[in-house]
Length: 447
Image (cartoon, rainbow, N blue to C red; front, side, top):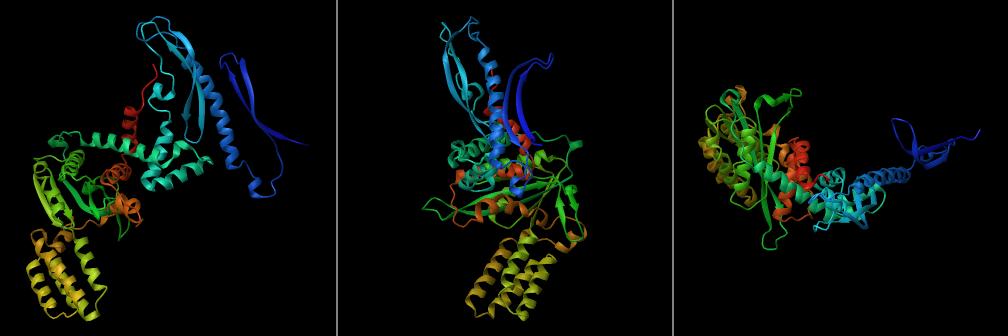
């Protein structure tokens, strides 16, 4: 027996069951698959079916849009003035719809494109997909990825369009996050907050500048650290913010301040502990939080201290490693002066220029940050923050994955800043709310 499967679209009255229009979208004979390729529908066939379904639904929906005939300005009956074909771009398919043109004797003319009616000809699902793809990959790669999903090259998915959508939404998100945030009441305030501040350098498109630095900060409550196992912890809730702007840190400081307030900081209650890599621009951001807390504790991040020792250890013999470990021991116990003294003794006997230079840099690093070196052993024993390990992935997630690992990629400050706003939103798990607010500004409701 020969059997087939048929897809039929019906336009009908659900109350009476009366069918006004019926259309066969696809009919296929059912055969035993001989290869896995024969199993089900091909990607192209699925898209074609979706295209047909969308076309039918759009035709009946635009009929309802076209039915409105009263002038919203003077409320008299408007006159028809032909129709206009308008583009509509869904998540996976593109369509042409007919929009009725109308005009009124009072001078009013009706909107005659999807763009004019709703604020954009692209469905929010499409723009969201473009933005997420564009923040994860180069715009060219994002374009190829989007077209691969639709099984065709769509002009709406060109890399410049994706870049412009990322920029538009990034600016909306940034504007929202820069709005003043009121401090919480004292009885609701966080007793302690941890702020991890770091930076990453990006290659510049500007021929006069080799690179520029983007600043990253992650703010969280210590109670939101969850133990995974004996060696790993994870953050279940945090806010990450970022800026690549050259504005004397105005943007990043405001973003960090607002994030601290959102996490519950109060000037009369909260202790904020700032962990940084020791760069002056990081301490500048940290110190800007003084008015937001009862006590500000600045700590040189132990993760970055050990990172510098590891780089040197990879180039020296076992005997020298043991000598260097004594320097590190003094730092671990909060004694930078003895560490500097021992480091100076080590450096005096070195003939290797590269090693001597590395030791000098380490000495200057410790000397410059000795005011922020604490007794790390005591802090660890007291379960107080002393390292950014739990939040260190923020730099990798926000900068390195998208903007730095591709060594050929170059950036303008504005372009880097836009991508960082999207990635920070996704990383902080606030994208859903941020995107909903962005849609309110991008789209309008039909009259």
